[in-house]
Length: 102
Image 1 (cartoon, one colour):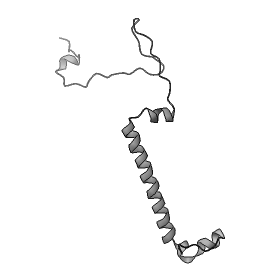
Image 2: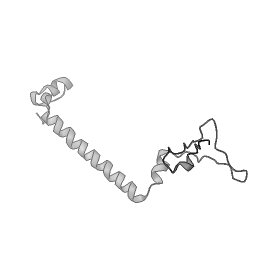
Image 3: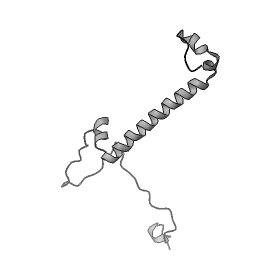
């Protein structure tokens, strides 16, 4: 008697059937009645931003403002606490009037 090797009749203990996806060289087969698939035109960054929900745009704006304010505080902190500012060498390098931070 011949041994049956069908994976479906093995009680589900064998490996699953391999699913193949079409590659760029082989486009997907469409039924004759289906309309042709047309790629949507690409949006610009501004169009994509304006397509967002108004609440999401508000959150992006607030996050940008918060990031900017944090950057201002970080720059001031680093300028006051850097070794160059403490030693007064920043003014020598720039060639400007003495700064108020030193």
